[in-house]
Length: 327
Length: 304
Image (cartoon, rainbow over all chains, first blue to last red; front, side):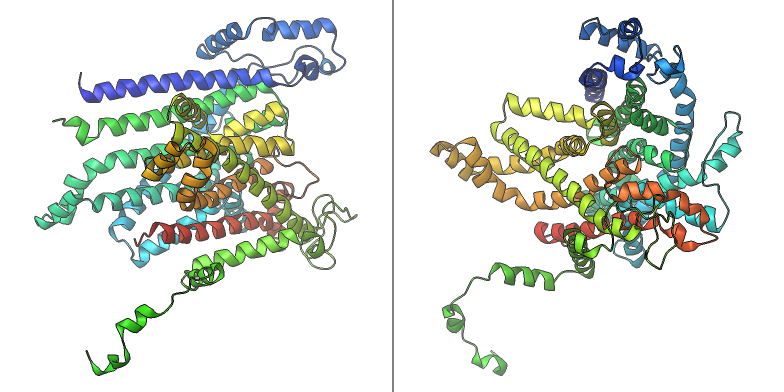
């Protein structure tokens, strides 16, 4: 077998195992809920029969592994159970909603926001990273470095509120609340998500740019680049022909790492702008301790994170010249 | 030799008794060569610590003292106004330094206690324990830590002890990785082998043979880890699932006063109220990052 195929298959297998183990952790977390949460969820006034029915619905009378397989099968086929909220005896009857129904439309919004931020951030960061590496220690380099070091240290909500203050309170360019309705057109949605997307961009550009810069500087110091310079090849040729093939792996890693970071950043930013996404849903569910919804959101975030990292690994393996041209 | 150097004698110089510099002198020498950013960072950190330690003497009012003037403007009795319940913002900022930094430092220490001891044990033993720990850390790191923390908090509840333990355990995975990585280079040294042959126990080898030799990267990591923990706790509090009221804490202060920002065109100071705690968080992280940068530069001998 070609060494590249072999390594990629190994990596895929490892990613699959990680996904399974993570899903086990997320599932079994419900086991640690203190006390009998049947009564906690349904309220003090719940009848014993209702509590028993609720326990049976959650399958608490079955052994753990059976419940896990059941749940995993449900998640695979798009059924994550029903939410805890809306089940209280006071609301009268069962008004809980399917977790998938809650997450579905919000996932679209979150993906829209994340891809908008990524579309601005990735080219910008690569441009800044490469130019600062080429003009190292110039005033331009120092300025960009100083600014990015500062934005890295800022909490997301600080960046967000500064932007709101400038672009929404002083100059009424963008709305401060991103209340996107179901039937908003693409342009409307893009306009409403402008500030959240810019916030996310500012947060990840700094990381991405610094890592790209470090990767390129590291590369330019290697002996074969010096050799190419001594041969008298022009600078652009050195970069395109000699540096870039080896730079793909670190750059792709940087991008994927930061897109995965978006997954986390999106939670805080969505709450600041009241953006109807999965992050906000998760925070609300954590506050009301609605475990099925929390689990559903957690598995989506974790799976995205793992898949992005897996993708980065595979791309960096597939573009590695040392593996592509084995001796 | 030129005439200038006539007074010089190599024998003289060699015969001079060299006294060892004291720790204070070393610190002073280090500070003199520090770049302005690092000096700035050190000043800011000292300021925060002073404010945190002497909070009860510096704050004009109590941490949770409520006055019947909600959303009071800046100036007058309340320098930065009051919040939605009528609590003095300045006093809460000052107590916030104590609570927020105190909790973050405790959490970071706990994370290092767990991460370092497990990392060292894994690096020294290099058997099933190493494999077990490394694989578990891989899995834990596959879940973004904020998401994991949110999930665990929804299950265990947002008490202070839970927050400290959950974040410490999640962050100890990063500490474990770096400790194990740097310790692996030291474990193969002859003096560690000699200590093993001498029959020293695991604890001795960890503390006396390896730890002193991997300290610089760990100290730098401590600074960076503190920033991460500090920002994570601030984010959780901002989301309303972290430190619970009435404890004054910067993250929750931003959340509580955030609504004021829409009054920017009528009263700019009102809009700046939620910015104060947010800026306090940002300034401290910037300061710590500056100092860590300088420390790394010095200890690694990097000259760029």
